[in-house]
Amino acid sequence: QVQLVESGGGLVQPGGSLRLSCAASGSIFSINSMGWYRQAPGTEREFVASIRWNGGYTYYAGSVKGRFTVSRDNTKNTVFLQMNSLKPEDTAVYYCKLVGVHDYWGQGTQVTVSS
Image: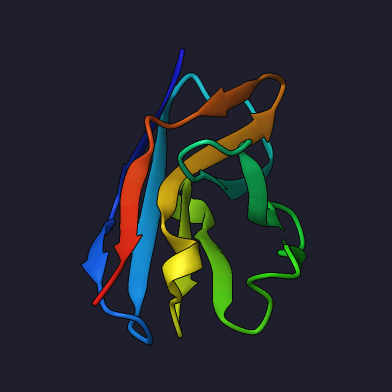
């Protein structure tokens, strides 16, 4: 079994920054990629960003490109999401996802952008 533990969410003013972390532990045989999704109330869960474990190639949703940066620490099986220039429309529960032999999801962390 694989566990994903997210941290770093919270309340921030528009224009502010937050850094999310997601640490994977357990029976991890291989990681293809890790990434972030988000879900606002009344909407579908949507892709935010991901990073390939080998090579570090990154992918972003158009709505966050240039503001968010995804990175990883291979030695700790951890993925990060640096979020800058946050907007109220970034408010959502952010979920970490690990893609490997199987896919795993974290429990989610709330990000609220409000003045």
